[in-house]
Image (cartoon, rainbow, N blue to C red; front, side, top):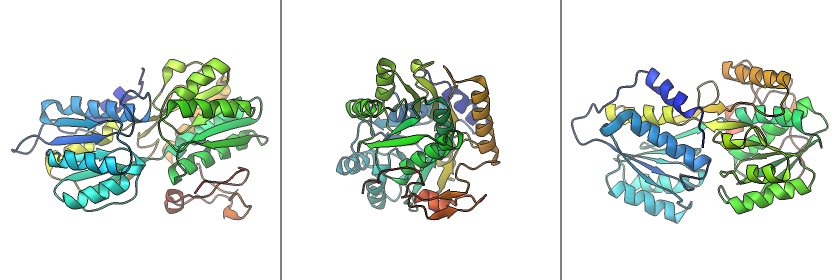
Length: 359
């Protein structure tokens, strides 16, 4: 499986001048990672694992890495985190939204252990949080989807109805509709991050509704596999998934975690780690956009890349008014940009999306 930007991310981290090797005299730090899926899922968990391995390669023998994959969110996560803490972990990365409460609970019991939780919002003196502005990448995907749909119907496979996923749906639809006012979006919620069978069934259900471009906020390559067999276009999610290019995969959102992992482990080594709340996007290099391939016209590719550059520079924000909420009530006035607080807690669809958000 190709990961075209992971090495670039590691090179970026090296370019930051981060020291390799421990600054502490005691035993080398032990760094733990907990994944919700298998490390070969082709997407989210695999990319966290590969970023962890890139971090390990950066520090070499200066750190020890322990991993636990396919850990369900809930009581199992609390058990695994407790075992890691008892096993001498100095810093533990918990890489799924549903690990938030277990992370907070275990952190209270082990105040000397540091924790980093991906995509959550609860912090503590020994718990930091980090996430990526995936909605920036969704804007580009929506732009491409709006241009490439022939049926004017695009689909979205949602995992759980949390703000991260709702932001992605809204951003995708807003930008699809900007270039194609006739576009409609169908959302199917499957209540899981990783289940290839459910992801495949959801993709087929969308195709049966006349959808011809599918976006997925789930972790496996199953949607692309179905699209390759049945026809339609899609995107890599969390990883490049380039083995499905040039069709059905026409681009991808790529999670770039390695530089962050290197930075935070370095802080542990230096004794400077503090609880923090990091939410970075394309400009900071945490969200990558895969090569645009296949039937996308050159002028559309160029426009998509200009949008990427404008988002990266801050010249454009994907949630810029005028925008209304689903019920038609005003949300953002002309030129007004959504604030981070609203985005972080987003629990509504924008105008034009049909259906309801599950509780």
